[in-house]
Length: 259
Image 1 (cartoon, rainbow, N blue to C red):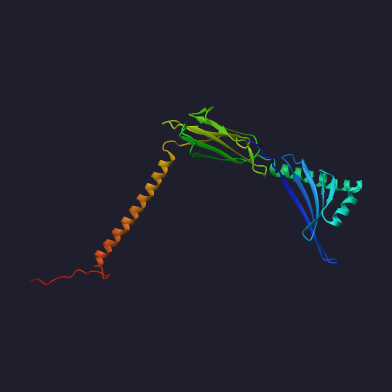
Image 2 (image 1 turned 90 degrees about the horizontal axis):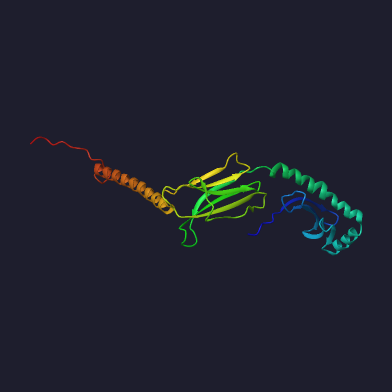
């Protein structure tokens, strides 16, 4: 499976209007982080005039590129001046690397507990009638261990697992699959070990009934409840009509004189 290259972008924007010539100028400072190392960053300075990109500096190339006639001319002048190019390197170190490292340590470099889910799914093929999936979402750091247990013993066959997949926000997810043949009295569990847990997290799969049968029972129980409700309502309606004589008037017993 191909590993995902994660990247993160931090942007500071400054815009102003020039009343003398009526142009709207926007200056962008971008810190492009290309991995988990906050020092692996590319700094980009970009000048935009009236929504048109005029000129851009790239710290990896350490040069400016012009995109309009005036931008091309200015970029050529700046690239020929080592002092100007060196001045563009200052934000790379004092802004991107410095504040990026602080943000990384303060908000990202903490243990984030995964959300673990265990569910059943249909297997592909007839060799194994059932498949379980154990998924862990939004955890940090990347290192995690997902194992399957059968009656408390680790399962070493008929199982596959994905790599730790990057979400793109310094968090990860992973999915593990177990093909199995349900056996009465057998206990299947998924165990997840992560730095955020004080002890492994274990989820047990209830195989007392297949998932389809559990759905049928739930639907049947709902139908039974609805049936009781309608029957009770019908009985009340029938008793009321019997009491009122069917025309809404209440029947009052009358006495007859003795013959």
